[in-house]
Image 1 (cartoon, helix red, strand yellow):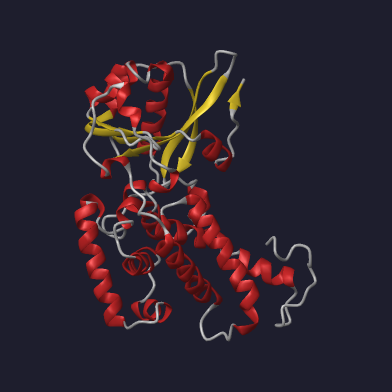
Image 2 (cartoon, one colour; image 1 turned 60 degrees about the vertical axis):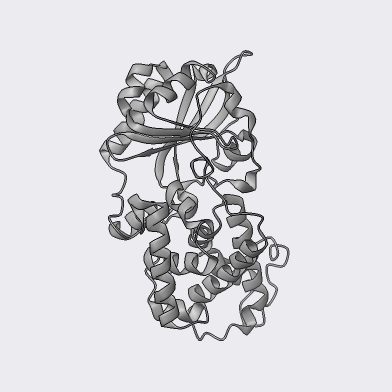
Length: 341
């Protein structure tokens, strides 16, 4: 941690050197990032919340009495940090599909641009999910960071959000969640039922992250991504149409516009979006689902960074195409170059 790096042998008042304590806390960074991301819907907000959590833990560790595990204690701090952020935020994060009706595939539809804090943001899968574990738990975790599910979570009050994540994603017992939130088991169970009801309305296909969880990335899903990328790089609209579900949607934050249906998506790609022809793609894994980084042709040579594309699918067809086009923000986060020779 930055706060302790300059004093590697500083005592924490607990018999641990500062660097030893920092190493113990750092073990939990990835899972805390996943927890805070689900609560907040913003990748950079989650980073800030985790850094604040670890800083508070480092500063107050000598008062940690061990009545709970270190992990539980850190989750309590992280929950309070996120609740503080949610209490001061301007509005809940959304996706374009939650803001209004679909539009026509014309360039004028790009007129409305919303600020970054308005959107559910993408996150590299490896930043928020464990690299290994029980396959069933891994499937639930993947489903719980999908863009649609994270967006649905933002419609829940903060406490219900935390309860649902802790109970159904992280599989914590109700008694432990009640202790963490300083409430009763009955209150936890009630909050969970209300959260489920809201999600059933906002995300009817995945009302609970633990109900019919998505399978781990399959050969079919990987093949679907490869076929889509190959068709997109050829700019073969017929091949792309065969890969899309009839009601597929397309959106491009920070623009509020979104399109629905194969014909409208094709019309966009051959009309206002024709500059994408000749693009190159690099596969990435984002929000628990396959995606790619798109590079458009550069008139000066090579290809320049254009967007991080999240492909949502039902296992056989692409159901959603989301392109995050703030390249200065997203390409460095995914460890990607800004230009290809």
